[in-house]
Image 1: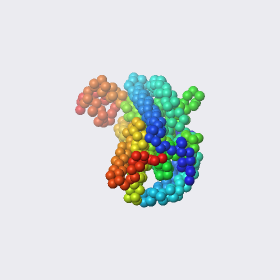
Image 2 (image 1 turned 90 degrees about the horizontal axis):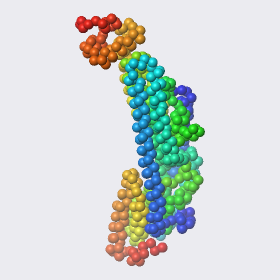
Image 3 (image 1 turned 60 degrees about the horizontal axis):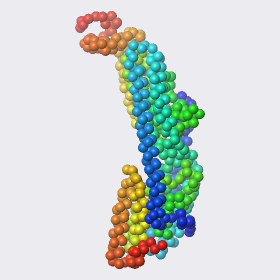
Image 4 (image 1 turned 90 degrees about the vertical axis):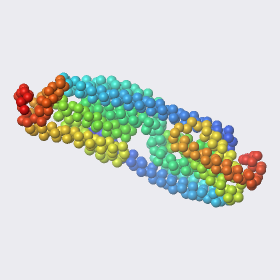
Length: 287
Length: 227
């Protein structure tokens, strides 16, 4: 049987020198792998950091400017700032292109994926604020491709879906923090509907990705939280015989009184509120 | 989620699941084959040295039948996705490479190279991005080889072959010298490499016992491999 060793000159090694020489080339190959891996982990971490900043920026800009009544204008301003920063992240992906060329991408996919997921979270959050829609797989892939539409690397479906699963968390935070703003309650319920729909769509993907299960649970919890808030508001507002805009005013004034160091007892009383009427606000502490 | 996107995702996930099933089928076969071979090779521990060639001749055809598996896998894996799926068959592949290197050592006392190990299993150069034998898998197989040889050193003596431990000792030390050229990180390869020293110690003890009792021919000590 000559199959296993038909050309002994190259097929087998029988001296220490020849064995050590071969291991020399193994060392080069393993070193290349470890070094590349380190570089990609670093890049991925940079992507994560920048993406987190984009998300914070969006949250901040959507809630800090209390004087802005036009929600759309607010969103557009936030989104255009975010887009600039997202472009910086896309440059980082372009820089990884060579490192993960050809069959290398899947070797390092796990090292790249944390950053990629965070990026998708930021990108899809900006997309939601801009159009109130979900960014599609193709659209995400397009943002990590060159001008000719050639992908820097293939977008793993898992990263796309896990990035979106994190988006729901950001949306819930956004809904909660905007609930006290003008029009916030309708916005919160809009977000709720969106997230609920997404969670239902995601349910079928859970068997394919283990990590998704945990994220789905977190989403369900946040959904419940915001549903409780919506419930509380609905119950309280039923006590007021008021159109939603007027209720907005009340909430707004309460919040601003609080913000300007208003009388705490007064606020408490109002929150406990009986038959709340606008005129009540002008009355003194008569209880 | 818009229906188009949803459909796209579902379609892709279905395809992946289907592919995974097909790979799994092949890997199950691969696993059966490598278990059969390793079962056969296990008999080296109870076979007198002069009967070993016949035993190896029986194992080789089974080993060569693994070529069907590697060919099927190379067909299944989409271009550039080798690393995405390779974990599924790593264990079987390492076992097959281990068997090839063990057979080679028992035949010629030499180390089967990585390219040649791939060739034995019918792995072709042009499959590179779909199916190949990675350095890591080859090195894992070599560690298994050393583990196995330390056991053989003991059993060979029991069967009255006092030269085998000395051959093994020289060979294993060469491999160990090779491994010490590597910059291993804290991974499974590193941990298994760390275990090699126990194998070497065990082999050394056997060699010591054999030499002390002047069981091994003294020529073997001076020129152990006697090529």
